[in-house]
Amino acid sequence: MQSLVLTSDGLQIADTPIPALMPGDVRIEVRSVGICETDLAIWKGDYETSLPVILGHEIAGVVHESSSPDFEAGTPVTTEIDIPCGRCWFCRSGHRHLCASKEVIGLTCDGGLSEYLCVPVDLLHVLPGEVDATSATFVEPLASAIATERQAHAEVNEPVVIFGSGKLALLLAQVYDICGADVHIVGHNRWQLGLAKQLGLRNTHDTDSGNWRNDILKATNGIGPRIAIEATGNTDGINMALGIVRNGGIVALKSMHGCEYPINPSDIVNRELTVFGTSRGPFEKAIEYLAQGRIEVKRLVSKEFKLEDGNKAFEFASQPSVTKVVINL
Image (cartoon, rainbow, N blue to C red; front, side, top):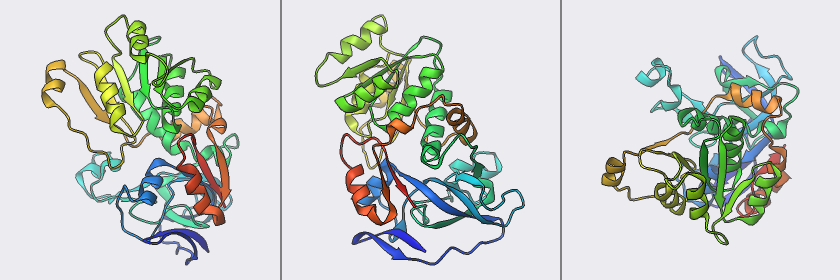
């Protein structure tokens, strides 16, 4: 089978063995894979992992062969990305995504940028007819956005400030919007801020041309938001989130790859802040939102490529204005 393999010499198309179907596994015939910031960080060398590796964890495809009668060949599916050990305290306590010994598809083991991929059957989720392969590549990041909203739930009409205007920020913004929050997006990429407005997210603040801080304070009666979300992936976003959130507020961290930040514990204690991160979320709810058309994802796709053009896809995806790139097989 053809695979896009990342080696110490970069990405290259290679002929690799079709993965053997083990008991309890399902082999997926991959149709589409999204490139995310983790993939780009590994490709750039900012996020270390063992090489060679096949990247890709935002996966959509159909069942090719199954060891389980629950999944027939041809069934459209997506997959979760954590393969837990099943034995540790976290696994036995219902927190498999926190397993300290887990394998991660596309990170510690081969991912979806390949014609076929085998995964444990309990990772699979069936895709309804309303969710095509391109849209299904958003299930994993959308699930993560939903997890953030559940942990930092906003009341109806409550201001929520999201720092960043990329794919994850726009998914977060839509999730909070449909939950009734008053969403404010703070970023510097004018094209992506324009895209946010096209999605119906009216409150956008350009850090390069406006006084975003005064605008946010005005919207929050001068005390700052209770919920601030960092989705830029850099320390500037953390600075802004911690600087604007009200005392007793919540700062949610997303998409931080290879980033080191000096936290001031006294500031967190004295201001009684809650700082947390989320990396996984409910696939079922994400699929439901997509099937119902409540989350717009097609306009977030900047460009689609074929597997043989993988190098071009990663080069294109690394540009600042690009929101999402999908590779189709």
